[in-house]
Image 1 (cartoon, rainbow, N blue to C red):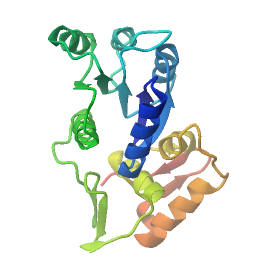
Image 2 (image 1 turned 90 degrees about the vertical axis):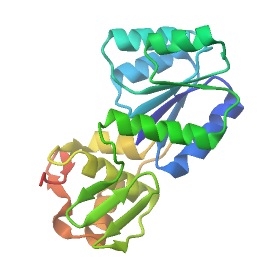
Image 3 (image 1 turned 180 degrees about the horizontal axis):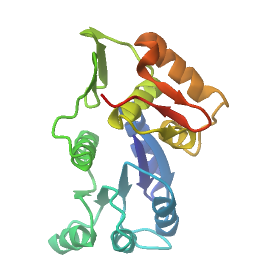
Length: 219
């Protein structure tokens, strides 16, 4: 699950990124509105956390331009602006949710889970594929009723593939999901994760489309 965090407070941004990474998010972090608008316009994110008081371009203007371009990425506004008028302005500009600082990290996580569920039009968060069941909320995976131990990257890769059955996901797309901008990626890292998932479940689970990427077949 790829998340864009837009927050100009260094300590808060680092704290949010650290808190969200164990939840299965690949967190990319920017600190100004202009860079955020460019990233959201040119790359794919599953959800964004957006401060409003940003340098170079205000968060409300980022929202307005995103929605004017019909960009549907779910956006949670995270701001110290707590007046009713500010909330109304944020929601009218296109925010999907609004959380006021200071906030509880557990609430932030819960609101993000709800946003992602709504964006996928899936009232129940669990994904089921043949005898595999993946619960993104509890970060649990079972196969034929037995728990399967996956690394964080393996979990994220399996989630992305199961969420799009029948769709070929390119290597670039999958690497964006698994690795943030600040992470080093070895050339064969994706293949290693695919190999481990095939071994832990069954070889036919993930199909290779040569020169393009990977997919799980639609049932």
